[in-house]
Length: 325
Image (cartoon, rainbow, N blue to C red; front, side, top):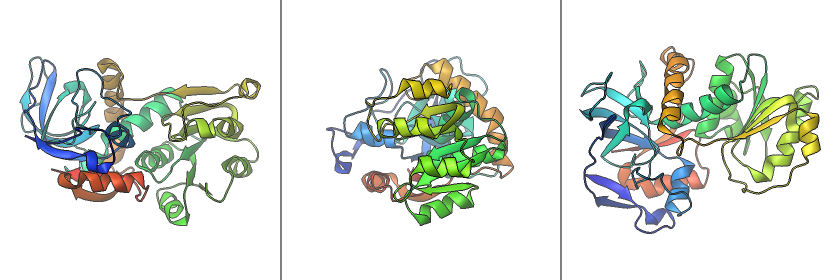
């Protein structure tokens, strides 16, 4: 088969399309003929040599895909050859075929085409696990989403609104904020021009955000704690602003706040399967009835993966960039 490989770490030009061996499904796995994958910032880090795949997983980039099941490994139940699916991957989405544990596979939601479904697994699993399973966002609470126009952000806005929460977002510029507003964001903060701590306090009569979904990390840590409400929860899922920061623990304790950090890729298979099952139960009906939808900025052929990486690296998109095989 053909796949996007990374012979040497580097810029987007380090992505090389090559002939590679066909994968074979192991026990508990299904083989998917890939229709599309989607670009995540983790792919960019892997390309640069900073985020190796977990041991035993595919060395090719791509943390999600959509396609059709072409083979079942031993012990797989509940799926059949020919099923149209999308899947959460530890790697290997930038290829014509990928083997994936059956517990990480989802049916294509009703009313959604196969290619668009590739934009769902990573964002739905990340948002649902962090905002709802870990931070326990409740109806009537306020969620602050950093990077509201990103793939994660556009999904977080919609899911939070679907459960009755109020949503604040940060984004760069009026155009991206307008797109967030279209998806239901209530409080719009231009991080280039405004202080999000002041703006969230102003919008909540000084209370702050009950939950913050943060992709920045160290750069925002102290300000995020200031922006939290009493008993607030800060969920860190990205490190675009660095990995080390100082924190005034007295401020954290005064708010009786909690800070969590979580990723998906390296989690044990049983934890991933539990998240995928929760997403199928809680999120898939919202997609089927039209309350929630994946936001796809553009679709490019897999051969143009380097260009797709340039687009994501420059943050020149809203939602997801999808690669088609």
